[in-house]
Length: 350
Ligand SMILES: *Cc1c(COP(=O)(O)O)cnc(C)c1O
Image 1 (spheres, rainbow, N blue to C red):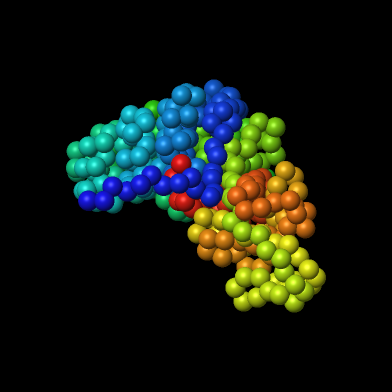
Image 2 (cartoon, helix red, strand yellow):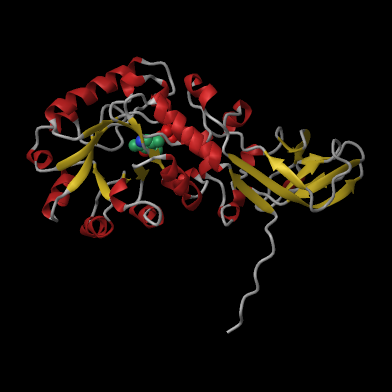
């Protein structure tokens, strides 16, 4: 067998500011008032890496972690006890139920069928989602009195806000419907607010909040603005520089034509890394505050920038790739959520 050599340092990197992440959790926990804050760590902690983020959140004091899939449990329980992990998609098969019992991870039951399956396979502690208007997952309020629900041993009774980032009467209505459900369904803890929901105020916090986006630096409501620090920084290396004569083209389909002599640089990041084509022309990469506008189409592994403002730059220099998820210009094309969760695996290997 050939012993693989250690790979050289990568030409692009994602840095997670652990202190900012911990500070964001503590800020959201404090803003949750008497409630505790949990943490949504689904989608590999919104692209920033479970192995990086979960230990930081655990050490900051977080004791409840939310993932969507059973496939996400294994990486989280390397860092925290299974019983602290809640699986939002619930159980669809006996295999899901068996895996829950083997790992200690707790299903969020979403329907009467799921409730029946969980009980039939042995029951035990679970969480229950009640739909109060988003119509994705959860039992209907009218099903609250069903025997399948009565048979459950429910820790967290929860619902999910549809428009917490907006000022709308729907928020108050959803909170009232969850309170109604709480009267009909025995439970230990109540939970409603995501990141934006925490910004709505303590009346929405109940016993446990479930921030995701804001932990990682997103600011979905102005109320959170002074409390949340940026967490992710992405940088990529210049691979090559070149000079263009007037009329020469850049990239696939020659969508950029040099109007004059230009110095340009090819950078080691592309859409396979989550730098999607929507972030092409009109946006820029940066070097020490100098903007380097993007030219032509974003390729899979590369993007070309105008070096007019950085004539001193050469192959090997690191450029900052804006991953500022509060940036409005970027949000026109991509939401803050998409910006984070599309971060490619090549940026997460370190
Ligand atoms: C993803 C998710 C959250 C976290 O939402 P953010 O808007 O990222 O804070 C909370 N609750 C549920 C049910 C979720 O699916």
